[in-house]
Image (cartoon, rainbow, N blue to C red; front, top):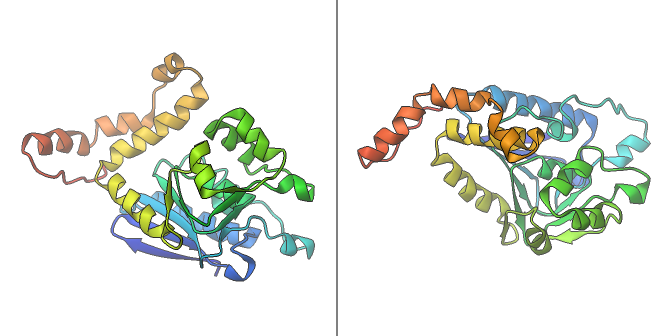
Length: 255
């Protein structure tokens, strides 16, 4: 009802589909999206995900304040805004294809992804303080970990808007796409990821994020990561070196 999905081989593309409200998300939409991401996590044939917004005006304008103002059900979803911002156990890579406005919770959904591909007309902001709120869907935590602290605080404390080019300069945007082409460029990045072993990709993602939680490099090195253990026991762990020695493309199994 509030999103569409498209499978392209091992890639899943999820589109927030509420263009009449600039793809803003209310709890019923978060609940639906949470189920989509649950299914993505559980499906062994899906290796990479892209999330975007319907149309070319907005990726996601954040929380649906008009819905909230009418007294609609505001029951929070356990996995967070858009079913993503509090999801810490998804080790499959996610790409945000930001095709316009990414405000508040919309920006927080993008920050919850591993790569952000922004169209030239994309606009990012955490404007919650301007309406008496705070970016508590982990925007206040993820942004300062993605870019220098003083730059992050400049955005968080003022709610100012940042374009795609500045976002790349600051460091939270991975790549800038021509207007209307964010999904296509995101697919190009997904294709590069899909050339790699999905077991290696998941182990790498898990180690990066869990390693941050461990603290310094020495402490992170000592953590035992389940994804790394799974990689070492996988068919892909043999297939990669074998394909290299036989001078052919690997046939990844993802197990």
